[in-house]
View 1 (cartoon, one colour):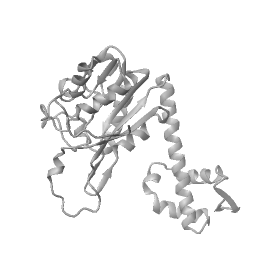
View 2 (tube, one colour):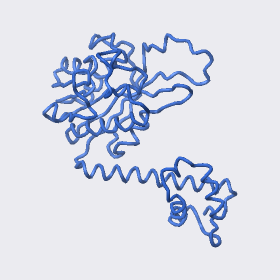
View 3 (cartoon, one colour):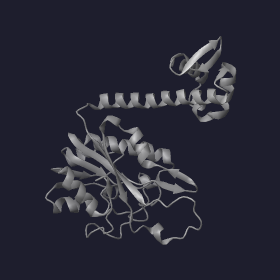
View 4 (cartoon, helix red, strand yellow):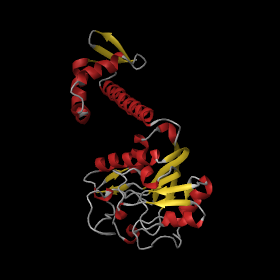
Length: 294
């Protein structure tokens, strides 16, 4: 099923550990995927490993609080063998700060202490690639993650993770209902938008592709996203200009509308001309330096 809801977390792990996932979630995944070897590189209070061992699955739990850094250290080397299933349950950004609060002293390597969402996104991509490398071909790797809204800004961690990993390996997106959250006991006054009452379980199935080829495919995937974004920007500007315009007006409007995009590309005017010239199905020249929507 693509939706899970377990109000009872079970007697696995420690109920006092904030953000602890219900053991029934892992039990459901183990029953469906039937791993021989399971690894959790962010084991927290140990819920996932306790469930796995109870079901007779060979299981390994690693965590920053016990000296393992999934951003820096190889999961495969730490365990000594590849997994059939490798699932992490990271912090949801700084929603709950773990080191120095839930356990031990403040640790700069703690993902809940990332200085920005972008830093968290980049580090989690590395963690997922680390998990992929620690997984058998044909096995599954993935994560349990929630989104976060604060100060009117909605951050979709799951969408960012999907965008940064091989799209050809994405196997499932399961929605998991959240229960017994600290936020449930708070009053927020008048809110136009609903509280976030769900998380996601993201699963990828590893293909027999070497790391270098996987990285090449990821680079092509990101390039395709960027190229598609440029096409849409140019087309939107032409639509605003009545469907036809000269290059100078297109440059002027794009400079006003997409400053972030331009800051990352000093050759943006050449990129606009390239976009116009290479997409005959979208754009057509009607005179020298004048373009229209095809």
